Image (cartoon, rainbow, N blue to C red; front, top):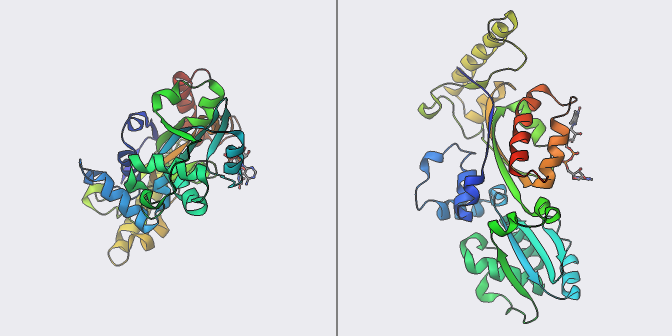
Length: 308
Ligand SMILES: Cc1cc2nc3c(=O)[nH]c(=O)nc-3n(C[C@H](O)[C@H](O)[C@H](O)COP(=O)(O)OP(=O)(O)OC[C@H]3O[C@@H](n4cnc5c(N)ncnc54)[C@H](O)[C@@H]3O)c2cc1C
């Protein structure tokens, strides 16, 4: 068995990559198959997950659009009740941010809406493979003359005034923590998540070191009687898990794995939601293992976005 400290990584490097590269890098966390990433693997990977309905992968990248249109056209968009798009009025129309999944689904449900159609045309023209099965540019309505849609780049999003920045800038964080912590993290509903799957990962394989990895418990100091009891429990669990794997699948054997098991999770949301999460998860009332990781993360985010 292996014992590691919890850690986090803000994924800003990935924000500078293409949407497909970002989606693949995040999506492969489920299978821990990052070693399969090559220069050409992103588009086939994204096509495959979209085809299989592994939809949360498509939530791991957002696009921001500047829409110039009349207030009447904007009300037509609101009639679609776009729950998963962030929409803010601007002097000339609105700013819209949504994940690839959100844009795909609004295309399927409201493709006949001219404003939805025109937003999708802009996204489809840039990355048609992300919209396969949801929107077909060749069959779409022609773009309307009185609506203008423009893709807004990351640098422009970062330069938005604070009220817009907090709603439109989405930031991903990869955590390496125990399963008790991720069970609490996934309660934050506005976020998107992808997590290492104990159904697909077989920890007896070489790439996992043929062993189970656990997160060092915050509560017990190494060398104490309590730590020694915890260690015994983990060793026994690992022995039983590996024995079960000899005759059953990872999804069956995982039923003996405990909260201390190491897991990786990517959490992706806007800065407004991160602020809410930090308020709840760094307070004295929060669980200590959660505070152990959230307090340094909040400090790092504050350094990057001091105005927030
Ligand atoms: C100290 C502490 C102890 C806790 N103990 C328990 C416990 O014992 N048992 C337990 O089950 N949970 C517990 N929780 C989880 C807690 O109740 C929340 O589910 C979790 O913190 C997610 O936060 P949230 O609901 O504020 O907001 P998020 O899910 O992060 O949502 C952000 C915002 O979106 C809005 N929102 C999202 N979904 C809805 C909705 N359906 N309706 C209305 N508004 C919505 C709200 O404005 C909300 O503020 C605990 C959390 C903390 C911090």
